[in-house]
Length: 514
Figure: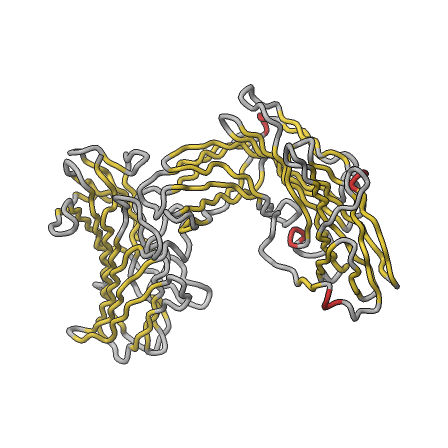
């Protein structure tokens, strides 16, 4: 449980046999009999980590080590029991130690739960090495219902103990706590009035699958033994809403989308949420419209580079990657095609468009792409199925490194239902936000001012287009789009700057009518 971002160097037992000393750990269950476990052994203070089966000799250099494991015992009529424990061991010669689950104390948590919560909480817990930079990367743990999860007390400052407890009812309730050492009475007491609330609003129609799993992961600002412990919120067909109440702190919302073949076909990690007691926030997933969220053309060294791997993405997730796509990218100068290339990031990490820019002048870069995922059947009527970009920009110095002076547009229709549908024959207000996001520390992102924003809509799949009325206030634009009686609406924007650079973005099947 709770693997952190940095992964320790694991050394197998076989590769350590030539060492000058050894450690053998025996693990006993709650009835005193031997139980087979996998033991994680961490060197102090280097953090070098070994893995060995209980009862097996592990060759080690002489020194101090943390030996930790989860002693799991199955049961025919339930989840069995988990006992988490660790020992600090000074290894010299042939050292043998025993970790005895009978010394474990029940992890007890309490919450003034409402009447609809009838089952005991499910608890994920782990013991971690505290003497290294990323304690939860050097850990052993498990999960079980309260009453079946135990921890063996150990006051050593070289250890941490963290847990996440989750109660389920009409809403969910989640509490996390980290301790120095393994407490003599592990657990804690919590009150609903001291929790924050996160409402998940999950819409349908935009994803490559209908089943959406939502969750929250603990992400304390300073990594500890609760880092990345995860609470599942709901795993169901969208659309749905779900509310979970959590202890104050920093949390990572996430979603994972299952395709028609059961495989993960999408999802991601929105911005972290730092919550205080009593605060309530909403986390949306799957809102229309999905489009490009990050990458812009990069110029320099007499070339242009573009990565189309964020061409179709949930804007509430954002970031530099989105759903798998297949696209055709063309760079031209006047009537001359410089390069044309078809790309996909399906099982390919090198979907990069790279073309020469040998002289100054006006260039045009077009991208025409759509969702692409072999082996699955897309949901009927999937939205944001195709996206096109048409950038026209001037290159004054082909050798200068910079980000092309073009934009990506975020479309956000208001008033749609949970299936991203507008009512027939109505008018939808669409927020239109041109943006230029930093492309990384090694690229120069110049300031480009928007001169004009125009918007069109199509009710026939892009065969004909109708201009929308656009209003502007500050840095915000809104378009009024007249909806047809049925079908879906495509949206197109054109953003220009004072120098004449232009950015045209089109999202087909941006939202539905229903």
